Image (cartoon, rainbow, N blue to C red):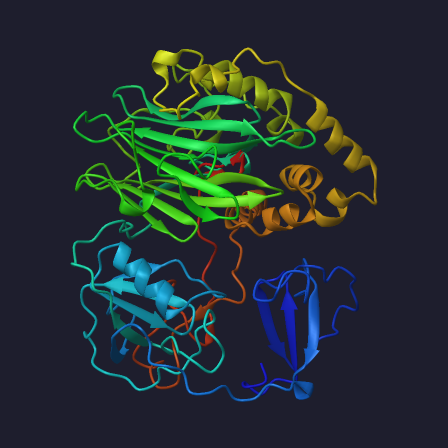
Length: 528
């Protein structure tokens, strides 16, 4: 902020930084208690939820850093971009951690020849880059690099880097909004393909998605958090395609660091990859050309190119508990499959996303609590719990088997509901303080996993998208996205109008995209 000439800097929720010449519009707050991820643990905090820790830039003792060392990657220089992109594939923006290394390595894993960093936080991957000629304004700092060192492109300008890959592209996403995406995160919150949001607190192996007319199946393993009310989290996922020549792929959290070919991902979290029930090192992929697995930091990507199926699996960690948060991506919505399961049917109608194993719709309950407690438990365990070992596609570590996970005769435990009800009745509870506006999923996270988990829940992109979608549905209108950027500057504004994908220095007045579906954490689910 000092380099840019602003009087004040505000750090918020650990990872966010704001710059400005005013700061006290809304008065004081007292929850600037989130650790700065770039500081030593237990030292400096960087604000809190909706709270800025404000700093006077004039009092900073910062001095200009020494000239940066040469980057470890080969730069091809600064190149012009336009609405019709010079580099074809855009990686999801990273406004806090984008760096040359992160962008190049991501593009390399996906097989692209070139990586282009743009306007600091954007990363593009492609096999071509010089469509519009050179440019000379690649002067925007990479947010994930030390200040004053490496720049990550500029407005309408890509700093282009060689990746060293072979150009054989993997994990590419479709264009034009034709994807169907479901999400599961946390303990576990699910958002179906059509946007229905509910929780699944069943300790067992579960059918997340299957086809009625083929053998295509995705199953998940849910295990309890070993604290308090013991909400469930997702600890394993297995995909079996209809084509028997394609490999079955399983990713699961290892029982210990000593487990066979377990790879450390973060904290105490170790992951095993199984390909057709044979354990492999996840960093080496599947060893096949018809299915791909790549490990990028805390993210593990799975792809079946011929069936247009992708999974993005992020390894999470809260209170000594490791878990998976997963985006389930059907690139073409699988029009040839009649899909059923906990993630619903991608047909645009969330009112039929609760169904029996024959695919017959079941009544959707009324009241928000029904989607988090006994009605949701009963729906999941009665219809999608795997109670027959011959129907499970999971492989197991030595000493473990199907019976160690199957609990399909389990009864509903009201402890979690009682904890949430008590929090609702106590105006000073952490759940009500953190979870504003009120959200059952947030309160569950806060009361069982802590305030940081609740705050992270509210900031999760799937939650934000689902909330905005609900408001759109309730208001019969679209919401305007604020504080987004477009890639136009004075030099290019006349000839290069903005579009919904562009980033740069003017406000983007595009509207909110449809929510993504998936399963993250404990597991909360949502469909599109």
